[in-house]
Image 1 (cartoon, protein in one colour):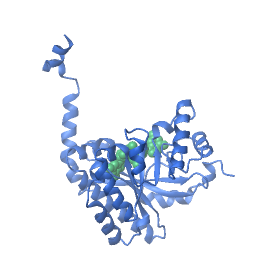
Image 2 (tube, rainbow, N blue to C red; image 1 turned 90 degrees about the vertical axis):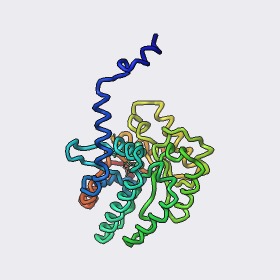
Image 3 (cartoon, rainbow, N blue to C red; image 1 turned 60 degrees about the vertical axis):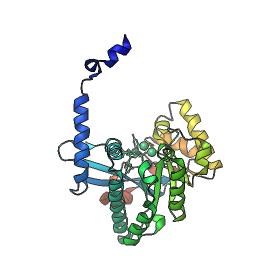
Image 4 (cartoon, rainbow, N blue to C red; image 1 turned 180 degrees about the horizontal axis):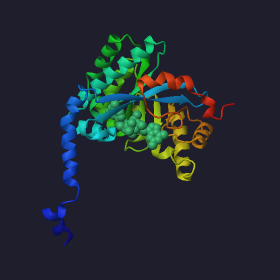
Length: 285
Ligand code: C2E
Ligand code: MG
Ligand code: MG
Ligand code: MG
């Protein structure tokens, strides 16, 4: 009965499915012009040291303001770019944009460091390392000014090749953090082999830390695990002072989230920094 019903094309139709499909095709088509027509830009969100409150780094997050569809979330358009074979182009645009910004900050006497997000395709791109180094060189930047965030699932698509590429990047001086830690399917045995310097605990475990006892267990053990493996541990999605205080107490190394700042346009970073007061956020001694 059920099987027959599923096979019928009329029964398969879901309201909204055509609209969704049309939107996806439109976005894939428009993605290629988006960079050229300055509809794409990078936002920068600070990460702070949990013990001093000092800003250690910014994470670069891509933004797309579509001319007729408005703001498109990166989770949506990055996935589409990955599926349509456009992600490497987008990543190259992103690297150039970030390095351009880093050079501008540096000229202004603010030599910040930025973490960029890589997709599964990028992690197995054998040319990426050379490309990164040549762009850094072009803008007169130090390799320490850039680091990488990759998700477990991105690495797990081809663990052997990803491992080789990440090792090359590491050798070139770029450090790697595992993003969204705890949500993927990687085994600890596989993670242990990766040249990783940090773990970012996924925001789904952090956002309700003060009300979900299970999340406390998960976050505490992840921090301990990371430290035992010699890694820095970063919490993303920190929205309240109560949660920040808990993370500090658990020994988390870095905090990132709306409590500290939302992702900002590059030109707003200097003003934000000038007004930033760690004491408003952290229970500092
Ligand atoms: P991600 O790398 O895990 O980034 C963290 C996401 O959490 C960002 O969403 C950020 O804006 C959001 N976030 C930060 N703090 C808070 C908070 O306190 N509360 C809440 N609710 N959210 C917070 P965003 O910017 O929408 O990016 C989503 C994902 O898209 C990123 O997750 C990353 O996987 C991907 N992405 C963004 N930019 C790029 C890029 O340039 N390249 C690639 N490959 N992926 C990117
Ligand atoms: Mg990230
Ligand atoms: Mg994340
Ligand atoms: Mg994420």
